[in-house]
Length: 116
Length: 114
Image (cartoon, rainbow over all chains, first blue to last red; front, side, top):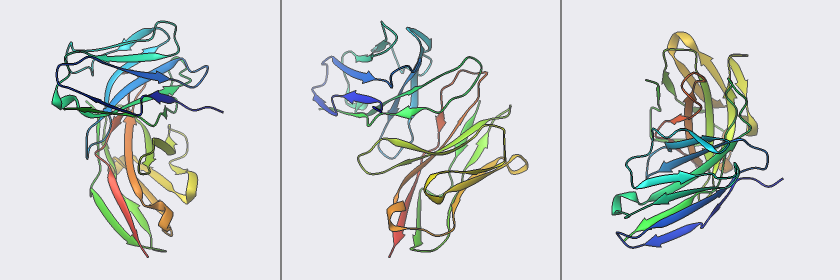
């Protein structure tokens, strides 16, 4: 079956520009996660959705970062006024999250964002 | 707070030798622990997970890990390394009472020498 997909695979932008990164989770997965992976580091949690709502956005670094999941499926991570320090691989994961439990997260291939 | 520490950012083994990748966790409650593998230019793939059932967990590709509460460890092993095992390996911890996000270690790059 189809896994988690992310588009675009690569995004190059200029400092100060606005970007949107898209994630298509595995069909039927209610939980969706965004992580950021900088060079030589492990993925760092950004935000977690359960259904349409953001259950935990404590990992968003500042108010330039925002994410939505309006219909409980596809999610978009939005970054305003990009900075060079935002350059990283942005990973999306989904899981068939049941209340009170921990389920395996399935990761997409990531979007490599480069801010010039 | 909870976290994982992966000792050794780079590990090299000969083909056919034992693979041992170390992971220690910090958690005030029983954790859920995972190992993921990341091949070049690919996404993270689950190798195995510990969710408070058996302490010795078997995963894909011949890997296994043992949860040792007394040592707060969850080391990943494989008896005989293959060239195809060369990749980046990440240990992660989560717990249900703080939400479901994973906390990852910084990763260990495994090189297999022919």
